[in-house]
Image (cartoon, rainbow, N blue to C red):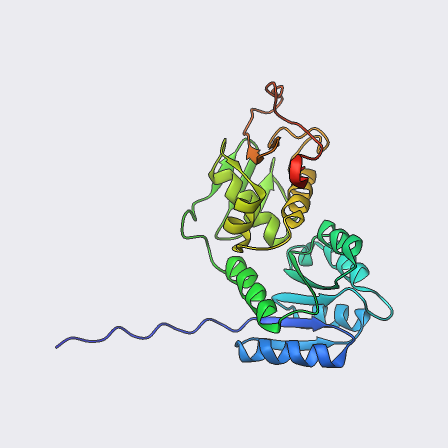
Length: 262
């Protein structure tokens, strides 16, 4: 007599905090996320959003940039200044023309953004993608990663440099882990978008900003990077080097490559 395998346990619902001062937008987003199986809290201003983030400890934050009182950028800035919330995944809701604020939001540590008007289904897919990567150890390599004075534990999602823990956002951790798995290999921004973000489309400046932020956390001199180097006209390459070694000729270039890579 054969026995059918026991059904897999459903994944634990994620708690998502939606901060948007437009009641209609907030209601629609919360409705879609709830139907996708998540627990949703809502706030209509920045201070309330910060209070709920402290009280309910969400797994992900959907944050509008244009908020009364504390705007979205200030909310993000305060969250990232707290070590216990530095890795909270954040998806920004931005107006179509607010490119400068959008880039600043990514610089402050947002993981992704959706431009208004947006498809709620697309937002849910982006949220699911970020949560899946944040919660699941990568199947292609869950063993600890080491390179020079860098050490990453993919299962615990913790990273250290020279024994000091790095405050990495979810996307920064994923990007660094991916690069450490493929030292010496050049990846275009489009390839990184597909393999780290899991998207076949999107604003490639998101990759550029995350590379820049990662350099600020792992390079001795982010303006003259020696680990994550730019390959002109192609993309980026991780070049492990012995501590104190001089960069090889042609590596460690800073500035913008064609197409916006930097």
